[in-house]
Image (cartoon, rainbow, N blue to C red; front, side, top):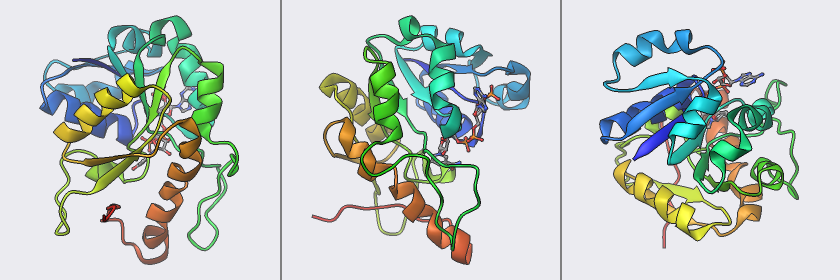
Length: 212
Ligand SMILES: NC(=O)c1ccc[n+]([C@@H]2O[C@H](COP(=O)([O-])OP(=O)(O)OC[C@H]3O[C@@H](n4cnc5c(N)ncnc54)[C@H](OP(=O)(O)O)[C@@H]3O)[C@@H](O)[C@H]2O)c1
């Protein structure tokens, strides 16, 4: 698959490397492609361009930028370049404030998630929340003693969620589909929960699993 990754940070690089590893063609989108030079030298076939170039290239697109600028990044990518495509939204709505007793601050509330804000402005884009509830070191084929972890996803488009489920299968995850966009109100705060053991005790090596 042709994949456009919007971002140049740890998440963009981890997921971009995962797509390369699994044989996909990758274009990374950033305001400054030069900052990815070292990373690109290690990723066979991957390229970097603008947000718009990466969005245009991708049959599937990943949004992996700072939450506070997620809307700006989608605007730079261009609605027309993203229309009708599955877009994995890995962002979290974290403010620039320090955590309080290990708990991150969000600029959203429990009645409106960041994914819903993005979906409202980009109605033609098939957003799917995924990869926001685990650290980047564990996004691709993680190995845990407790077995395969669970990735919680949601979004309004069933075909887009099937495409994302296919990627999660390749990346070694179980998928738990929590339904439509509103479920991001519950999935985004999993990031706060995931980070608490890290901030309090320096423990960053875990993932969620849904037992049935
Ligand atoms: N770090 C993790 O392990 C982790 C895990 C799960 C989810 N997340 C979420 O994933 C997202 C990415 O996290 P990250 O740690 O990889 O990186 P980050 O530092 O949160 O974001 C870096 C990216 O944000 C973009 N950016 C910053 N200011 C911008 C602006 N004014 N306009 C457009 N783009 C701008 C940068 O674009 P340029 O390339 O143009 O500089 C860069 O690609 C965040 O929403 C985070 O909450 C992170």
